[in-house]
Length: 321
Image (cartoon, rainbow, N blue to C red; front, side, top):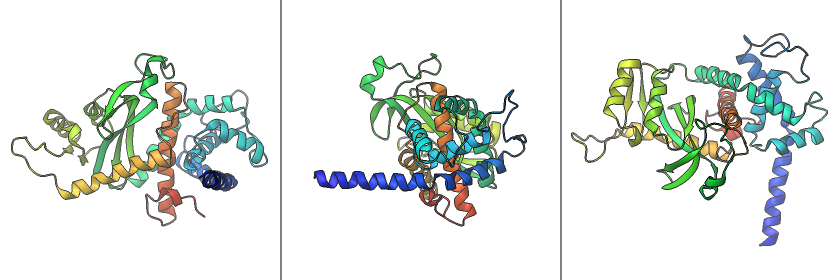
């Protein structure tokens, strides 16, 4: 038993080392994507704003390096930075202090959002059917909730207790609400307290970019008022399965059930490859930045698959040469 555990540890270590060996090559791929999709807002120095003194590492490279780490499933910034310094110092001679890098990364969160929106808009062109759902993002074991201090800098953004219908258990943290196309490309997302009902996210959809489309939801989105409001405001037809005891009950179309499986698979990919439910952030802004960068990295891998003629959602193979 011990021998098998040691062998498994060595195998994982070799896989991580092999992944890190290709870091520079992968970084170059993300750097080209950032320069391409944000070319109109990058200045000649590849920064998003003017600095009194030119920074050692430019804003575009901060985005690309963050996307690269997330795409390679390296979610520990401490580990990632130590490997950069020890094994890739020649590849990245302009590295700055890790705390300085993290401060600038949080300040660039709107540009992660803008980058993801532009890549997603390119992939979702001509789409007319979308899926809405939510997933829990716990930040600690619920037994520790009473003494938790992280992400609690303000009452409005502090985590709280919520119930997951999937696992039929309580958790402490947040909910991630997603709207994706039926192909699996994220159109929009929002982080809310764990106790917020899924229906409240539909208010954000009314003021978003969705219009003249069908939106598929589960039974948590049943609301005649919201269905009517969405359609009158944005011409979005909310299609949800009816409860068995509802008047004039009609079965949910099979094609809608099949489409909804896409977002469940996407949640699994975000939790597996992008470690969405493992939290190292100490502040709410830090947590939001990490989530935005993970989703942007996911969308980037989908775009690379399209460029290379691979299936869109085979994101684990997207960085293969």
